[in-house]
Length: 223
Length: 223
View 1 (cartoon, each protein chain N blue to C red):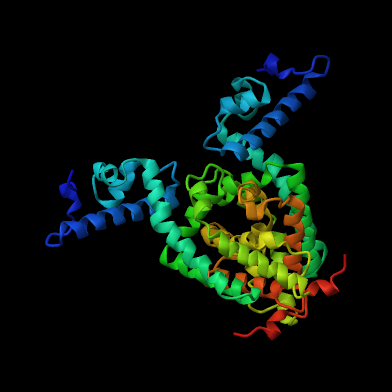
View 2: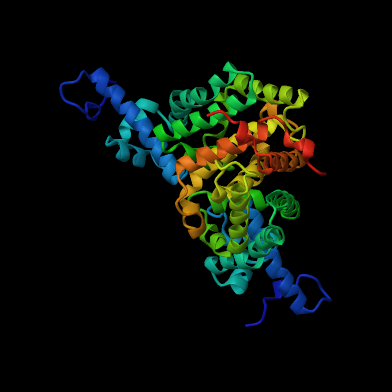
């Protein structure tokens, strides 16, 4: 079976290139729609329409919904997640590690505006359709490195022993992805109006840097 | 119209009491199912079945789905949200304020195990069916007090000026509700196994206390 005519989107360009385009456009459309409406609310027909191709094209490139979800995770999310996490191993110092994570997360969400909402809907929410797939592409080496760096800082007495190294990953996500994914909701409150993406990044970085910089405040902390 | 017979659940108790029971049981069932399956995946019939009554009973007590959602917000969530937030105004010091918030959130999620998942599904997620209703019952006075206390601490040079007072509310939620709602997901990672609710509370409290205690680390922070 050769690519449907509708795959040839730009006259004059080799089918190879335009077929590649169509496949990429379908992945873009799927990621955007999953973020906007959720996977459950997104049909193959809707993805095709958003990409400006026929539903047959979706089946041609991904054969079924599971293969499409696999491609979203393997061909798109893996690269983003790796880009955000892998540099973590370049330092053993917790503060630059966390600062880098926050900055790379903000950059990733600038390049891929659908990312925070997709994360909220399809990864952390019960029944999220990208949940297991994302867990499989998490760079565990980097997560282990972060956990180890925090534990070492605790042993050196630089960081509060009341902090839980295994929860630092979740803290970074909760201070970046959560507000970025829900910023429009909170802007509805007059009290929180005018909060921008840059404020989220600056705040998350300042909060983490303050908490993980020595001298650890816990020395002065009453119990 | 008098309460359907099925409302009289416990023989010997006055109809008044049992009718009240049935109404409360329906609210409990609805909140639990919304947390487990999401509002979109929960039918009136399913709520009735979970509460052990007939669907007619749901219509009898709440007339329609919107009234049921109103009752969930007004008769259940309002009390929980107020209990968590209103004590905030009892102090002007940020650290005890944040410590109290984390502790009350943990207690609320112990008493109401469905709370974190309901928050994630129906409040912060796009299209969440309790979203607007929850925004309406947020105790804005307490939120304003928290924002003001952080801003004052910044003016006194006790807290990093890079922190965003309007985002502290979201930070508290991101460090408590998010991990509590997703703890089962993360436990699937061997690296994060064994993390308990108490760890989440201790970690969130330690992180916030460290970040909002003076002397603020930002003085030493390189840029």
